[in-house]
Length: 277
Image (cartoon, rainbow, N blue to C red):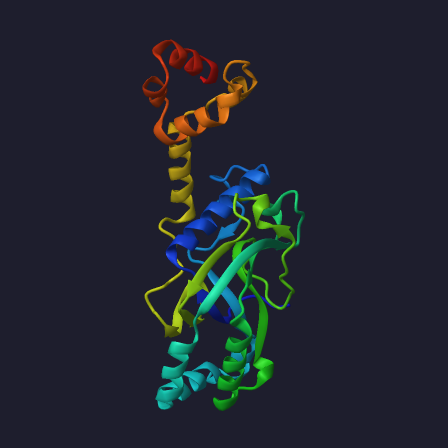
């Protein structure tokens, strides 16, 4: 296990998926009975999200500071190799689970690190290509470790590498979805804080969400305060309306409560409105 400064091999996620990761962290906080607006005081949440595929051991740079420069120089002097990699590193990722280390599933916010697990059929080939690339560049295998593909969500004191990162909880324990799928066209070598050193593919994909987590939380709170809360239980239990309860619910949720007056008589609409508000 090691932590601290690393160079990473990553797949940056597209913006819509980064937004989903913010939503996932929000749900994790709520499930942990923590206030999402206050978790940044006790945890670190990434400003960008990427799938980590591998990591350069930090000690390699203490003894050989030219290691990474050696790789970059190789790519610059072997244009065909670089060009082929830019077009080859693409595929599909599936996010389907959550894992954690150094804590309990009852409060993931207190864990040392929480991640989303990722499955991709292309990972094996990417690893082979990178393994060969490192060999061609004269970099020893011991300086590089492949990891279980994952997206780091929450940490206490930075990410932990060199530990298994399997799925331990289903994604649908936090979100309505069983999985989140996205296509990728980019693989990066990164330094700390998502700084891209070398991009194979679309350099415009940076893994950043539309908003930082703190701003995302404020928007969520504002949206929730505007969304009306209806008592659907009264409707489903009512002897007159329970047969149509699901239809009425879908109507109100899609078109608003005013739609009752268009689809039912005034007296019925008022009665239904009184039941659910």
